[in-house]
Amino acid sequence: MSPIEILQEFNSCYLKIQAIAQNENWLLLIAEKRIDPEAATHVGDTLHYLCEAMGCLEEVVEVKFNQETER
Image (cartoon, rainbow, N blue to C red; front, side, top):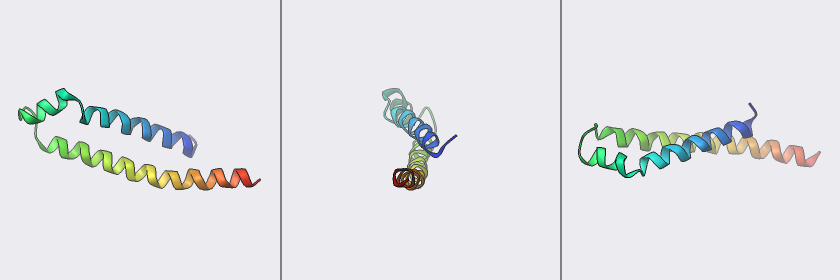
């Protein structure tokens, strides 16, 4: 898997988890305390760390892209 493919996969995961975090049913589960409220924190942390990982990969992808365009 190339760095750009990995970045695209992370981005796909990020968007899916973000959609869950904003989903009405998910929010109701938390609001009604039917699941541990910590779950919302964990989802938020997951989004944060995915974003951080994507930022690191974006640097690699950008460097590789710049090297290829200089050739």
